[in-house]
Image (tube, chains in turn green, yellow):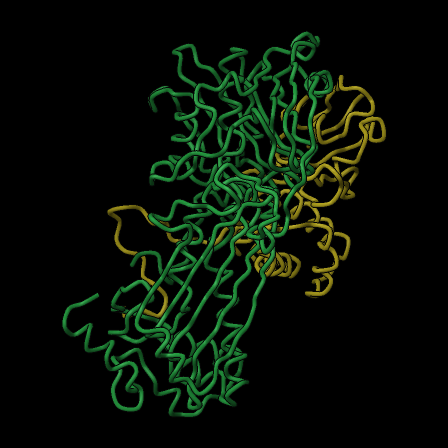
Length: 457
Length: 175
């Protein structure tokens, strides 16, 4: 315990306060070219024709790349976990969100790069887009993804499932059923440093990539996969990030810069404008969460039914993982012995969505905590009591079958009450995380504890 | 055209309408002013022009010909921190650090132009055009208040954690 509770110097503190910290955009390499991209002006369209010959002829242009220049164009962020690939680095046959990159150029100046983008001849056939995930499952909804509008690769299912206990019995035994719908919306992570990369071809044949990634080794793997080169051909320099908040987990710039550096044999830099960041960088997902709780008059939650729709945007990226995390947290910090959860990853023509500060978890925590207040109101019980009674305790089992050894719900809830100046009755304040006994071990939780005692999980 | 940047006179060759931000970053390689939004919105490109804070992304070179420009590099180096720099360091007021150049320059001007210790509301008002997306505002405001009171003029003697060194004693732990 050298660090907890101690005042330690920040290793980068002096650099930050003196302007010496070197972010990607501050790295200076001679003869660096500017990168710009042709992005889709449409939410959904077929690419009818694409001709970059005039762009290649623009003075000062050193490299132009399309899908044909990418050794492995279609890649999936979760391929390593067995999720199939679905997203092209550069669009080939169709575009599925406004701002999707189609062509990238590297040129002597920003102006020349823009001129080259203007010189590209591209023809689209616009198609009807889909924006509302709640309409994605309608029979007449446009099918916007090659897998249909729902991600189909959760083992044998097309959705993430949690099944625990006997959900129908729980609802039969309930005194009250409380329902609610919660719809947290998309948020742009909006780091002050926009997406940026500098790729430098080295004399040794390796590429040095100055990256703003939040996930260094992950980004390395993505670039190596698209380029079809071994990892030892890539040297990543990173760790200094001007804000990310989840928005720099997806690899936005590194791969395209790597390809342009190889093709032009010059260092290339791509720094997104604020407009590009807002238009085309991934956001936190919109969610649609329906909760149904089976509760008793004295404040026990017997069961919960959940339907979640997650808006992945145009491609899967990390969404299947985000919904899995969401599923694992859908009972919140509380013990509910009977659960039925169905979570769908839905495709729309919005920008692909990704991590942001608690990927998949903040959405369900918002829904669960708001819902608990609604439950407390419905049965006329103090919301603190409702939470403290149902709070996870040692020996309780989580929704995905983990027996809890060190849950912190009770002390955290008590500390939260203290910090906001709520005076709780002494009986609440005396509560601990200790295994349930007496009044805190009602009949509906006995079976679960017994199961744990027999070594099931 | 000429600029006096951090006390050094510089001849500059950029076209007259080039934003001062790009002159500093791309011609003079002075990189503490950041290209955050390039629309005058975020404040991280702020520099002092003849002592006044200006958004360098919206300031044309021609408009500041001959002016004295101060960037964060000119305020103080690692061995010569200004009181505001030291306060930001001591109060952990820089998280990712990308907004810090603009924050420190604006705060330095705010403190200097007031000439007396600031109130919290005055700091909030004075720095309202500067975004910290890490949402580290509380520590930033604490640092500016401390600096305005003349506190934290030197780097505190913080313990340094080095592997193998004797343990740093956590606060409140048994001796």
